[in-house]
Length: 193
Image 1 (cartoon, rainbow, N blue to C red):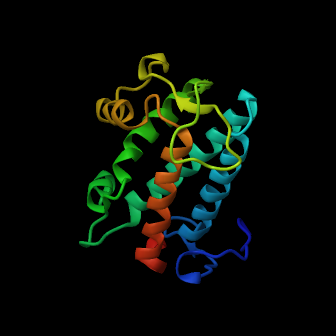
Image 2: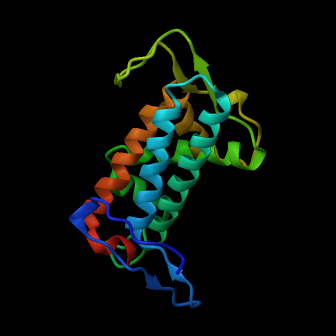
């Protein structure tokens, strides 16, 4: 067994046992399982972000970013409202904040492949939306020029500069958490078919 079912409240209240991939005998993890991984990682990040320990914050961010990419790849490859997978067009088709995934992927690729951090602690104060307990500091995305060079991604860099740079990382994780949860709600069991 490659995964274990967990009793969670998921979109549509469904639990899936997985499905077999057509290419091999390994089970393809269902959307709901990926969503649990992501939401659990975001929760860990939110807890760690209240602290000032950059190691703990970075570990939690790496995990959340990687789960977000796994979810996005799943959606790109499987969401076929018109009979063909939407691939990168899923963001525009879905809307509702999904466009920031280009910037999230840009950041993830820089931190993952070059093994560096993407955040800095801004001691100047909190950003909205507020969360409790209230702390007067915020982990914010670095300036894009401070991230290491990587494979060119002009669109991802543009989205990063527009929607993430110097903003609270928890806010962007919250947006994509909502995107993936809502997508699971809308697609139900079709999200992993």
